[in-house]
Image (cartoon, rainbow, N blue to C red; front, side):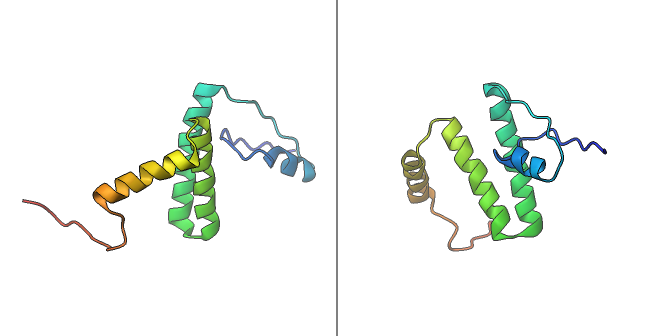
Length: 104
């Protein structure tokens, strides 16, 4: 049987999915420091996949990683939303489609 190396954070049910296909998954549980780093790496991976494919499914993956980061940092959705709204009120959103060319 051919081995494929991934060395990346995967969703919780991936080992079950792999088992269903008749393969075995060699996994380990990350410690806190490794998990924090892996979440950042996973966020970049998912954002890059969204940029490449531009699908709602890839965007959902980005949000799933963001939610995992919030949970890991013990930040509630309410607290996160409050921070987001405060920043939007101060600097605005992106609705006006403004493109900054330069300043003098």
